[in-house]
Amino acid sequence: MSDFFDNLKQNYLRGQFASESENLLFEGLDFLWEQRYLYKYSNADNGIDNLFNSQIYFNSPVKFNDNKDCSTKLLRCSKELALDILKRSLESAHKKKYSLEQIQKLNNQNHIKGELFSSAFEATKKAMIEKVRVTCFSTKYLNELMWAHYADSYKGVCIEYDGYGLIRHFNSTPKAPSFLRVKYIENLKPVILNGDDNKGKLISWLAYKSEYYSYEDEIRRLFTNHDNVPNPLPIPASCYSAIYLGTRISSENREKVLQHVSEKKSWVKVYNIELDDDLRISCSRIH
Image 1 (cartoon, one colour):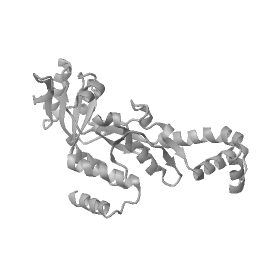
Image 2 (image 1 turned 90 degrees about the vertical axis):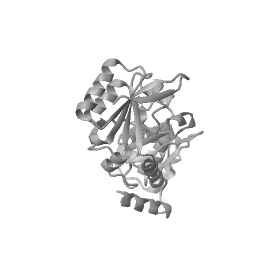
Image 3 (image 1 turned 135 degrees about the vertical axis):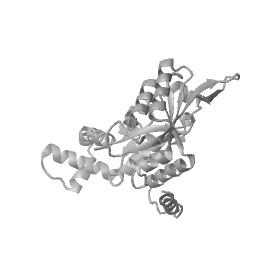
Image 4 (image 1 turned 180 degrees about the horizontal axis):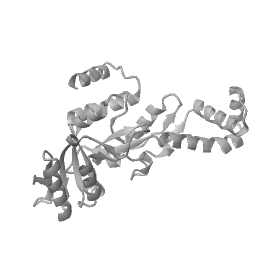
């Protein structure tokens, strides 16, 4: 796998990835190669279920917690795509063909454009987005905000995954959308859909998030066409390397994890998250 990755890196350094999306995907893969481990925070029930069944859930980006993150309002339409959408809408509504010249004239009539285009473009966006599924990781396991926000106020867990195992399992390449490192910026920018590389445009749409959330240091694994991809997605048990138990996890859930690891995944390390005397979070291994 090292030779495979080295070849990809040489192609990247030579500037052989033509699109922004290809570069974004390689940068995510490159970062994971250096980082190796990824972390997923969750409440106890979901985290334990995923550990027991060796699986990962994917979600639609429109269901993310931050309503600015992957907002469909950021998806805009190029002039060429707008004409194509209007043409298809009119032909479907009137059951006849329209020339490009006719469409251009109709596009200048606000009542025609308003009646048909807005709803048709929303339907186009919805059809594209419905095919996208994402699962989110962090690069940090001792992040107080993440424990508070995503791990049920420390009653949940944080699972550590071996990134190399995930790379092997997903067979990642820049041509097959895979790991994406989120970039945090002050002002989110519109993404212009053009009809030619909308898969790449969706990757750019998924890559940026408000700088307010930079503490998450997020890595996303995504599918831009989830047809025939099961959800939850089974992963090899060997992809699990550790699990961290929140300071407020119940005794019952702690025992469940310890029993499962002892019987089914003995290589997985188990840690308790703790507060030290200076109220800083740390961890201690219990298995």
